[in-house]
Length: 299
Image (cartoon, rainbow, N blue to C red; front, side, top):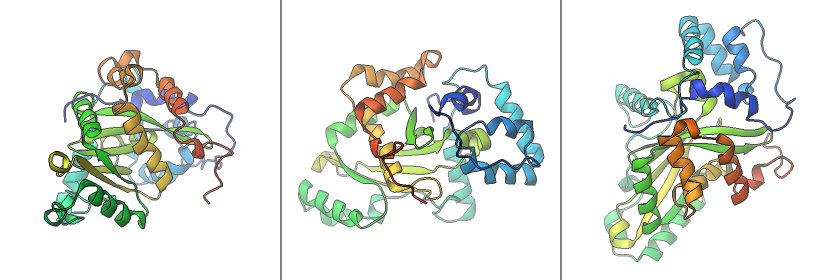
């Protein structure tokens, strides 16, 4: 897949130390007997606790692979933000699914999720755009997922910009501060995975959220249907919705200053400032319910 991506291993050091904007005391004490120098550095990440089991499992089962990845993180620290190609983790996920001979990927995501598998396209062609919208919304309203009906003009803008800028860094408000996610377009699918997930698993980091866009009715009905699949171990619906809303915030905006962040991330990576993403997010009001003191404990 063409286009640059955040080099998470290299950029991680800067984001680790400043991603949380307040002191942290919420992480469980690390297992020191398993924590080598590489993992000790990762512990500084405020979201280490959520991924600690996977990190320790990798270190226990494949110590050579673990050490190699930790070394690689340090080797690429001097590389610019826009270096690398996250399309690798998407392709890896697809190859694994092919190897299993099923349509489900290792992470439980559907491979080649078509609109026909959800909706009888031929039948709905006889209905108006408003009727299709009602059917789509009614169907997914009872499901624990993200969905939308996007106006054709808005999706056309998003799609044109995605071709030029296929990746971006998104900030998800957490009680501890902000957790960063990398979003990468693969066709009309938009794959998200967390920054720390890429740090620990590299190019094989699995998607944690996939947004599926269906433009089949775009010309005839003027709408694009969207739905999603997510890894519920790491994201709940309102968190996934916040990431989905940010796609429109950054890719469908009329504000040149906002979209310029996407262009800078993809084409002038040395100038990219991740704090500008947080500033835009806070100005928009997106994810307000996820901020400390405004949402009850999910546990």
